[in-house]
Length: 206
Image 1 (cartoon, rainbow, N blue to C red):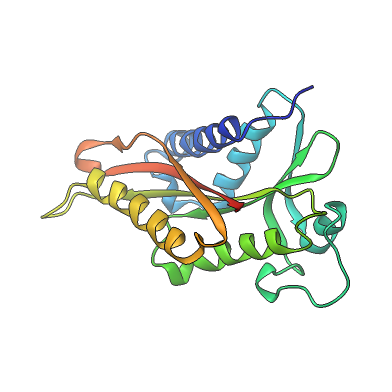
Image 2: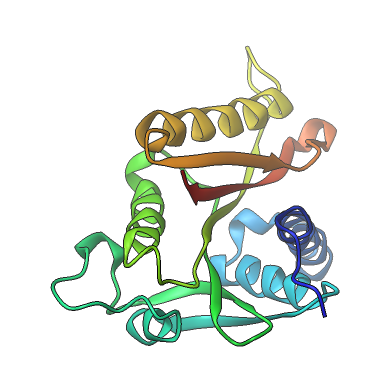
C-alpha cells in the first residue's frame, strides 16, 4: 500500500478540525469549539488521519523518547531541551512500516506567539535530531481560530489576518533552516456570531 501524500495529510487535518467544530456546536447546543478542551481537536484530527487511504498509523500522546527511539533518531549526547522528549507528542503519524513519520502539535484558539511558538521550537528540535537517520521527515502545527466582528474588521478578516501572522512569524524565524507551508480552510463566516477556520503549518528541513 502506498504512502500517504502530505497534501492528503494536510487535508485530513483541516477536515478533522472542521468536523470537531461542527460536532461540538451540535452536541453543546451552540457553543463553538474554542470553548472546548483542546483534546477534542486532537482526537478528531487523529480520526481523520486514520480514515485516510494508504499506509499509515496514528497515535495520541506518544512518549517523546520512545518515539525518537522508534524513529532511529536517538544518538549519544544531550538532546535539545526544546524538543521536550520527556513529555508526550499530541499526535504521531507513522509510516505503514511502523516507524514515526511526522510529529503533530495542536493548538485551540492560539493567542500571541508566547503561547504557541514553543510548539514550533519543539517540532524543529525534533527534526534536528540525527536528521539523516531519523524516519521523522516533517512536523505539523495544526490550529483552530475564531473571531467576532469588530468595529474596524469583520470576524472573517480577523481570522484571515491571524493565519497570515502565524505563517509570517514562523517563516521569519526558521526559513533559513526549514521550509514552511501553511494550508488553510475556507473562512467560515457565521454572520453576527463571527467567523472561524482551521490551518496547519507543514515544517520540513531545507
